[in-house]
Length: 80
Image 1 (tube, rainbow, N blue to C red):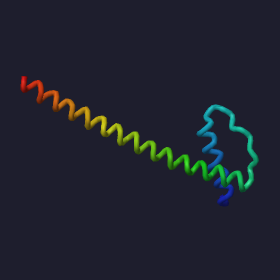
Image 2: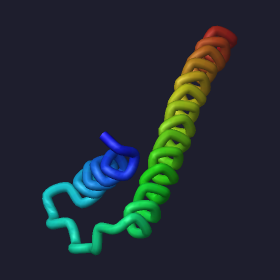
Image 3: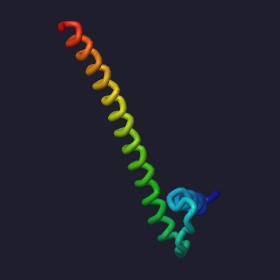
Image 4: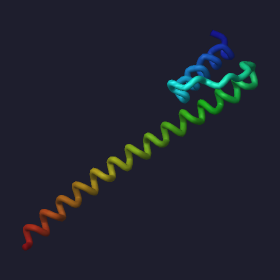
């Protein structure tokens, strides 16, 4: 596949993912719109990855805080 055709395919897949069951709005498929949409899809992919990493970090911190709270609770209960 040529790079332009490959980008058009990637853009179409991204739009399908974004719109889900809703119809994809019509747009003129030309090199300029494909380039713009491809750029947006790449930025969206990077943003999704960053958000995923933040969520995983927050889950890890929550787990650590919960463990720390349980330890402190046990220590306090032992000292009663």
